[in-house]
Image 1: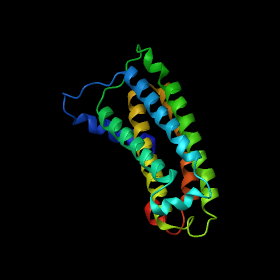
Image 2: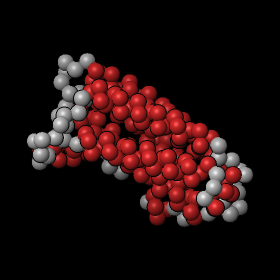
Image 3: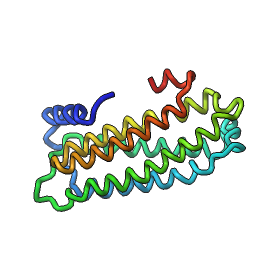
Image 4: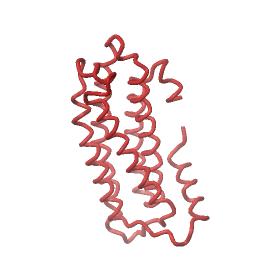
Length: 202
């Protein structure tokens, strides 16, 4: 597993060779983007909660809440990857930037909602996996495993981008929040990971 700190080092190294025309990201933009990611996480909770023993079968036909859940999760990943690209190479915020001091709390608020989403998915895995022909169905487990893996990777990179922008105090708080959500992602992996999904998640 690549650490947040090593990813930050890569980000800073990339900055040395980044075009001078790159526009600096403002701290208020970062806070606003956390709000957008939080909203996406909340929106995903509804289709996640609607997965049950009956409609899980509908996934086989491309129906029910699971296809919508996966589609919306992919939108979350696209948004996060877009922010990763936008933040790359932006210089750190100054110590006098008052808004920058609110970044850890904005990040934490997003992480709380995303953790709720992941815990719903963990609970649903317990509902779906005992179903004959569904819990071990390659398309379902592979689809869920893939989005969870991609989501975790995108969020890990995004956290590294934020750490590169903030001071040491904020870094500690941000990485503390990341450690929590990373643990929850790993639990979610374990629930959706089986012999069929192992090659996807490693």
